[in-house]
Amino acid sequence: MKILVSNDDGYRAPGITALRTALSTLGDVTVVAPDRNRSGASNSLTLDVPLRVFEASEPNVHFVQGTPTDCVHLAVSGYFDFEHDMVVSGVNDGANLGDDVLYSGTVAAAIEGRFLGLPAMAVSLCTSPDSGRHFDTGAEVARRLVARLLAQRLDRPLILNVNVPDVPWDQVRGFRSTRLGFRHPSERIIPARDPHGRAVYWVGPAGPQQDAGPGTDFEAVSEGYVSVTPLQIDLTRHAALPAVKTWLEGIND
Ligand code: MN
Image (tube, rainbow, N blue to C red; front, side, top):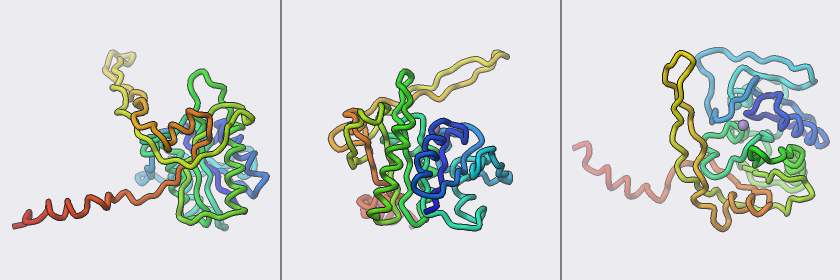
């Protein structure tokens, strides 16, 4: 099996190194990842400048001056003379829970791999400023999920959004299938001054959890479980179609 590994923290991040090492026991791993931290890049593609791919010193590790989506797009759309079977993104330094998936470059890299033969997977470690950063736990979770996929396939196209408590592996309580929760709106922007006295602004932290109720990804992680949420790309709100159809009647008269 050929596994494409990417992330949004950059090709030198400890999380991607742990992931590459763990998945190497299951198949041939190729890394194509951004040259630097591109967290929050979402599904953006670079269209106004050409993309350059560089070889790192480790074998089969490539880095790109581009976004996570650029990386996976290159890898699955002709950069290699072979096809990958799946993409695994991570292990991200930070949770991607609830609405986070809309901004996440980690999840975006998995989404870009959704047309490969096996489900795509984004793995995030729910770190906090003073947690231990157990990337090996995240990598072991990914290894077990990929091994399970090989033994027992899931329907495609499917994207698995996986969040892992930041604890040693032997303290993980188990795996739960979950739905995305919701966050409150993010904190207000943080104004500051640059060295020239000009106004600049920082995007504030994500909001606290709003729907962290039963069955959510927030709940699973807070109780010490690995959260596995199946995602779909269809953003159509099918239930609202009749109301919008009625609302549009006569607008062109
Ligand atoms: Mn990140």
